[in-house]
Image (cartoon, rainbow, N blue to C red):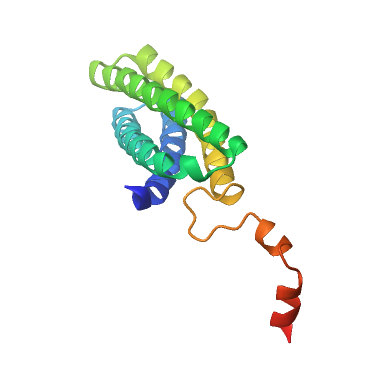
Length: 161
């Protein structure tokens, strides 16, 4: 599960954004085809967000103990936001399905508005995930926090010769 999280997350970030763009296009020029296309993109985005949450939960459990206190706190908030985004996306997708198949424009508009709000959260979630990886080294093999080079500066001088 650990190694599945990074590729799944990329889809979990981009698919909701594409679904939002398609949803806005649908609102600009409503058609049954656009409604169905944007609904399907929301459905697949939801699947990937669910997968990202569960693979991230597994990866986070392995990384937690190795993180400094600040990293652990960030990981906890990252997991909590992931849960809210997953539930919110599922709710938005249900509204979109209902609107699409019962031809209720108000339901589709509500779904797209929820998706717009969720998209901001998803982008922030991607930022915090990147911070966990690149700042705190969450699940990065041979991660160095920079402190190892302070042990003996002569080690680096000898290597240059």
